[in-house]
Length: 452
Image (cartoon, rainbow, N blue to C red):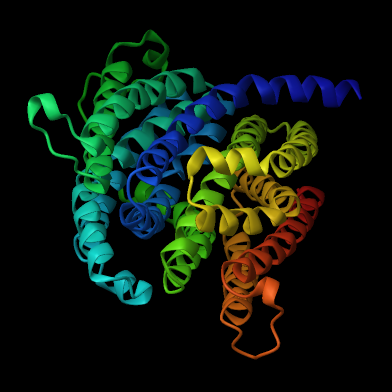
């Protein structure tokens, strides 16, 4: 028990800044959802559809860039500080490279729009929203480099502060741009205002991160300054891609399970997709707690692996899983009990609220399973195990979650109970997919730690 308590303190010391920082990121979408939910169902539907497209592209690219975390973490644990700093430079090149396809996909979102089969009014707003957000791809990926590196070297508070600064800029901008300002003649921009405010906040974060790397004495030890941006190194970039592409693939599969759900649910009408948007936003907020614990556990495991302290790496990893699951059980149960007043904060539309309420019936089991897979897969990345987890996600989330959801939600085979038709069918299948992936990831982690 003393070992669990000591490891928990270490994990929580790194996790709470990551949690606050990431909650501020999720708060971007929460603010947008709250503003549009009280203004326009069409704009809220556009946010759901456009947000699904953006997150699918953004998360996949972020996953590749986050390969800097386990690599720099192991080098930091091995006390190879200048080598760790060199990884940041190479990750900047990778972020800039990935920004190009990211922008192109947001400018040309027609494959996603065809799948969504949205109304002309919603489609117009989605295109406008994504065109604006294309300007945020480069700064958000560059900030991800800073976030991944700083987390790997046990500096999460710096990331947290800049994420909170970004949120403090986002909120007032979003309020003014979404609702308009009569005194100054600024019209209400709706969902486009959400995008503009996010772009400004992301650029602010990236510029402040650059200044912090230049001026904070903590980063002097990594020899980051003095020679400008290092030239691209083919071997380093290849190592980042070998590790990062499966991470990006895993995150893409995970997020696309929900973004494609949003796109397919959009075919069922405005109320179902708006209710899904509310439920998924609540679940996303919940997920930030095990996600922060997963990042903290992964950081500590990578540092122990780099220092060749393998028994400590195994112990900390499993204690991180246990702590995360205990927390997830408590939080999932709390949201289930409070689901009605929580939904009332988002909307006064009785039809939308009823849809969201039916989806949150799955929240306890869903959240525990989601936490298990997130914790185990993040710790596996610290051991540089990324390809097999991606294959597990393909089978569990795309096969069971998305495939099973389509069968249930649209009653393709016939015989689907009324309670599982529509959006609830997708949520039931997604819960099953996460249960399978959670069990598989934990089993793979157990096998990995035994082998090492």
